[in-house]
Amino acid sequence: MSSSIMTKLPFDEKLIYINGKWSASTSTQTCNVENPDTAEVIAVVPECTAEDLDQAAQAAYTAFHDGPWVNEYSGAQRRDAMLALADAIEEHRHNIELIESINTGKPISDVRGELDDTIDLFRHFAGYADKVEGRHIAAQTNSTLEGYTTKVPVGVVGFINAFNYPICLLAWKVAPALAAGCTIVFKPGPQTPLTTQYFAHLVDQTGKFPPGVFNVVLGGVGVGQALVDHDLIDKIGFTGSVATGKHVIRSTASTRNVRATSVELGGKSPGVVMPDADLEKTAKLAVSGCMSNAGMNCNALTRLWVHRSIYDKFLPLLKAAAEAITLDTPQLETTEMGPLIDRRQYERVLEYIRIGKEEDKAAVLTGGEPTLGRGYWIQPTLFYNVSPTARIATEEIFGPVLSVLEPFDSLDEVIEIERKSEFGLAAGIFSRNHQDISKFTRKLRSGTIWVNTFNPLYSYLPFGGFRNSGFGRELGYESFDGYLVSKAIIDDISY
Image 1 (cartoon, rainbow, N blue to C red):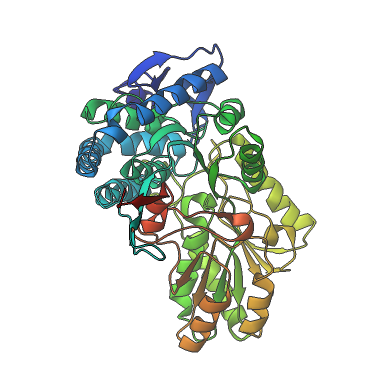
Image 2: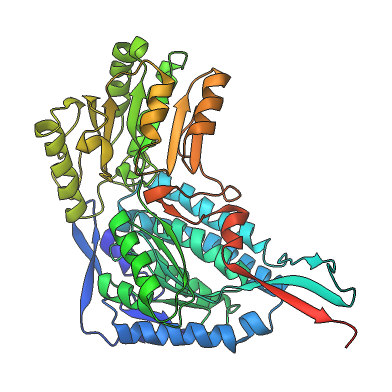
């Protein structure tokens, strides 16, 4: 199946999309793209150079300053272009879903949901494109002076995407930026470039986007660094690890032109199970909150607090929920969890499982081993009686590993510990007590807090974190507003 779908791509994956054209990279270096289910190489793409990046940045810069996207298109025209793009994605969704599932190892049912979200995101943010508004400020000291503000696009945006949600995270970033009137240079994760290239093909095919509005470069650290350092880039949007995010922030501060930065980084999201929770339902929600996307979620529920009074009763329910997850070929309708993305991540997760067993002295409730005998598959893994300070409980693993912490007695105790965490991306509480829910949601420093659910996100609600989980917001009006800058205009009308 992998080979057959790759022969039907409507674009040449060996080319890159810059300034409205598919062209060869200046590089002779290439990257292998794998199917993580089998570790089979399914495509070979270029490892772009700084020269390629410069061409993309120049194209985006020219499109922004001299092209029609910003200077001639009305907001309504940008809206219509984005709606046409959403329609194109919907028309091609079957191929995109299959490619995404093969390239990422995601269950095909999960990918369908992500394509629903992708299409919705472009339609949602298209609605903002003709609603960029300023303010009129009444004269304060001189009646002949008129003051008002206008909002303008921030400029050329360079995006560095993560591997875990290639097409969906692209939509998170690209849709609000296009609606605001920005032009874009986009670098996907090196492991998962194919649906980004497919997206560029659809941008091209709609005929609605002038050359240079959307550009793609491929590769890893080298071209990523060139993107961050380039003086024609006005803003950087990054999703990835804490260490790389900090490097990006330092780099953008040390270039000739300081530029805006938005970073969505790691997480170690806690969930709290109170005594009055529905235990069977909560066990399933907690396990899916961790194991979704094989645990490769920045907001995955990976620290689970369970009240002492229900601890022993709850553990068997968690174990049963984890062991009920179906691991199989991702393109089968019955598959519920896929493999890790590549060998590096597979070995990282296995090393953390070893650390949990040997260094943290945590007990294994279930899982902890490779499985299926191919590719990068690891069983859903649950540890219990884990110290809140253990490495597996405090370091982001990015895999299907859930730490059930030592039992707690007081919600205040949990809040005090979690407020000192280096992360603050997401959290959840399972309870029917509205006083406990209110206290938890009010006092915890997390960008998203779920109550009696875990993981749902929506185009109209902002997503982002505190502390080492990053700054800036994806989704919602807050995301759109992040690609606009206010200008103040002062006019002496008596002149």
